[in-house]
Image (cartoon, rainbow, N blue to C red; front, side, top):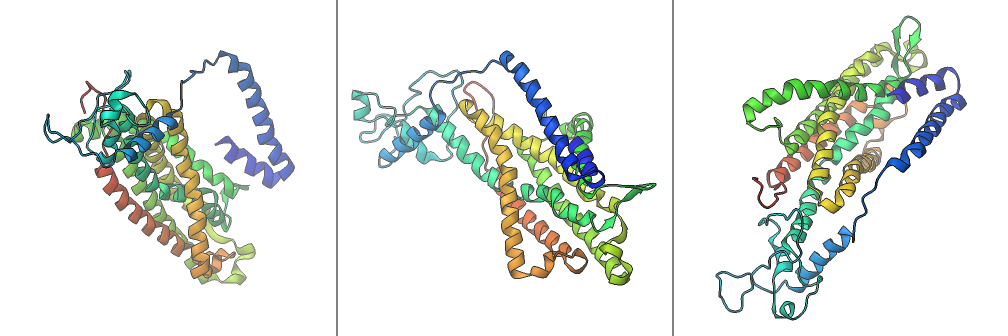
Amino acid sequence: MMGNLIVPYVQDNVGWVAGFAVPTISMAFALVIFLTGRKSYKQQTLSGSPFTSIAQVLVAATRKWRLPFAKDIGDEGWFSLAMDVSPQTNQLARTDQFKFLDKAALRDKEDELSKNNWRLCSITQIEEVKLLLRLLPIGLFCLMYGVVLSQGGTFFTKQSSTMNTNIFYKFKLPPASMQVTIGLVSILTVPIYDRILIPATRRVTGIPSGLTTLQRIGVGLFLSLFSMVVAALVETKRLRIAKQLGPSDLPDGIVPMSVLWLLPEYGICGIAGMFTLAGLQELFYDQMPDGMRSVGSAAYLSIISLGSFLKNFIISFVEEISPEWLASDLNHAHLDYYYWLLAGLGTLWLVFYMFVSKHFIYKQIHGSSP
């Protein structure tokens, strides 16, 4: 937030050299703090690699794909699931989803003679792979949120650069500083969510957290596509004013419309982030295998970066089909059509997300209630 407020102002009013100096000094100061405290940090050393365990399940299931599951105890020629072959603190309960992977736990005659981790795996190992397979489509259908979030630093900023940025007497707000609204609204919304929304929804749903993690993400996805609808409506109004006045009445292409009109689309993005980002962080940390939780923390952030790649693909597609939508002069472009396109894609992605989340099975530990 401080970077979005201070750096653009310094760049516009002092110079780009000073603007780049501010984050450089800040990062140097942060590095000193980090190096000072690093000796007090205790890092847990893990044995083995979780990726090896995943590979073992896939190889074992492939090797035994012809083996049938036992129908009844004592059936000859049928094979039953082996118990967990290694004691683990948190043994996962078996689920019927992705049942083909369960064949990695089928015990045959060769397994009776020798132990081979690439032929026989525990139920917990298999369930950990299932966890990853369940999370993949969830991450895939959250990519449109990354697309919407990236608009804050691109087209939202370009929009604001064509509008009246005077918000106080003789003070012009740098267009890039409007991005601070997203973070500010997210921070302000958290206590409202914790103190008001959770108790209210808890009384309706009976869930201690008010909403499940997947429901929380879904609400954020809906709000993100709604922000595109609002952005399209605001841009339609801006274009109408620009066309009514004409080029001669628009010095430097600035439309006499306050930049504060963009606050709703920025604000809704911030609220969506409170739901979606917090939900994704919780989901990818909690539902990851124990040895891969750091990977889960990185995976949810990768959704944002992959969303930026998807945004670039959409822009390239639009420029190929209808280049006038994203013309360099926004007063002669149709950025509103682009926002409507994102709203439509967001709706489609939300439908897919609702489908996969309906079939999602949360992690269950032996001895715990679902």
